[in-house]
Length: 186
Image 1: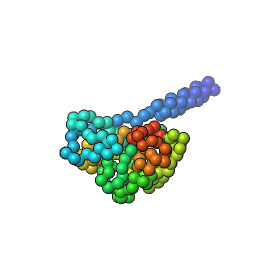
Image 2 (image 1 turned 135 degrees about the vertical axis):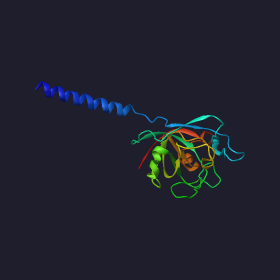
Image 3 (image 1 turned 90 degrees about the horizontal axis):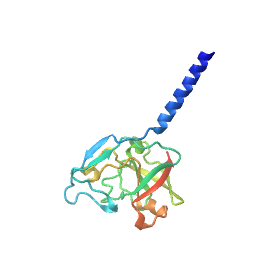
Image 4 (image 1 turned 120 degrees about the horizontal axis):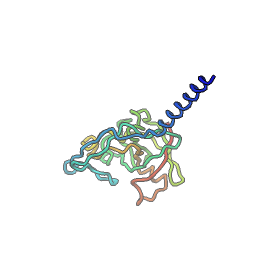
């Protein structure tokens, strides 16, 4: 009997250690990208977008933090219009979208290979919520090239949103660009 209690206790401890380790796992950088200066006029600094700097090392990620009922994220500002700082057409539907339409791009891990394309997520901040459609990936694995408008890779916790999302959340225009939010959805 003592033997079976010891095995049972061992299994409980093993499970608890595994569960604790899983909770402690975080999404760490999967490598670095070395920046290069964009050709003149090739990086669109609209919405305070960063342009890559020669020789600077930028983290890249293939993962994002775990998704929960209220996933913590950083909201950034992006134009999905033709000629905007978002670069080319959106990945999900190969179209451009008006800044007046609530649309978002998600970091690579959350974008899930397009698995969230054209689904709505709910973004919450400032005591308000807004529904926005996922139309693009905020690429966390690549950057500093023409395909990415010579911008660095996105961080792994980004919801890159149109102006319509910022307006719906009631954020004063002078404060647009970076905001802690939560999001939920499929």
